[in-house]
Image (tube, rainbow, N blue to C red; front, top):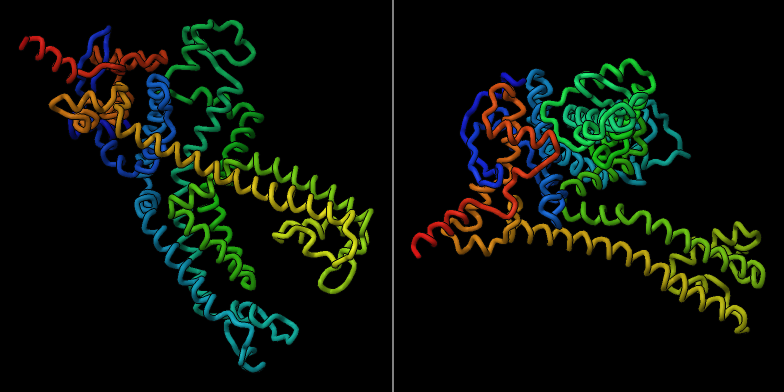
Length: 511
């Protein structure tokens, strides 16, 4: 991979701070970095919103660690090029996404139009239907007709097969990219759980950690190793069944239970289920269309993320609401059980469990509380107090708390997004200097962040250092490489910029 990537195609530059002096460092951008850089648009955008922006040095530290992951993804892309089929699928991933969306929309529209509870075909016509025979259905007057009519539609069946095919190719492209990332995450967890430290070339496992020096531990735990070789950890992984099982357990957990897996792995499995159980096809395809629409809309993602992020608060509020409703259920069961009648004029509070189900079903869904589903009585007490307290505590307060938690979480996420966008537009991420300072300079702020302190140029630099042999490093390259190894990021020009220094020198000369 290194030989394939190292062919330089253009020259880039960054500013570094070396021994208290600002220097401009030139380096070649590798060919594979330029080739695969556009495919990292989504990962780069995520990194922009994940880095710490409260403190410049902490932000640079998180950015470097995120940049190392980008380099590893580039290596994954380069490995995929060796397999023409995987390379073709990953390059056509966007095409498959569009095809899956179009098929899903058309399929749901046909289901909406064709599925009907009325079927004018006779029994003989139904028995002669080839699609009916394909699925093995027999005409039965007691069977739901609309399910048969939806399942035996030839157009729906053909589109379902196309949906399975396109979603399968899309899932393969996703797996070819994500499985290496999940494997690295699992290996990283095992490294922390079963650490291996190195002193003078000696490998030490978890049983001899006390013999390691503190300096060695700190260096390996905090440093960035661009040329990290996981062969030692992989060998220990294969030799230990416990670590090997833990490794694949973590990979499968991330593969099946991550948020992205819903749109790829579980999406494909659902399309297969819709083909295997065609009578449930309308319901399953409705869920698939929902996934497609949400995945392609950034605003809807934020809405769902606000609900997911506040899951703990919503769960605790739900438990509190359940306990309050249970208390009102016990009060109603003890003092006026005959006042609870459902629409069939049958008593709905003959047992405490039935009474609780009645309160949870009708009490939470009606604006007027549980009183809207109770018979009218002439007495005021104690029902008046119970109904009013239920209306105030449950219908007004608890339900409003649910809405408030989701709205507040969405508002916080929106404000965080606006803060990040304002920070990107008003401050240089590398040096931390405000944009107003550069407006007084001839270059201006936009030219500064695109030419002098381009944050992505430092990722290109790390890719260059990773592919180049240490023996061939220049003085500047060796300084940056050793700083990354030791977990020090002083080479970033925090609070400094060559254009500002040159401008100040020019002003002094004129004076």
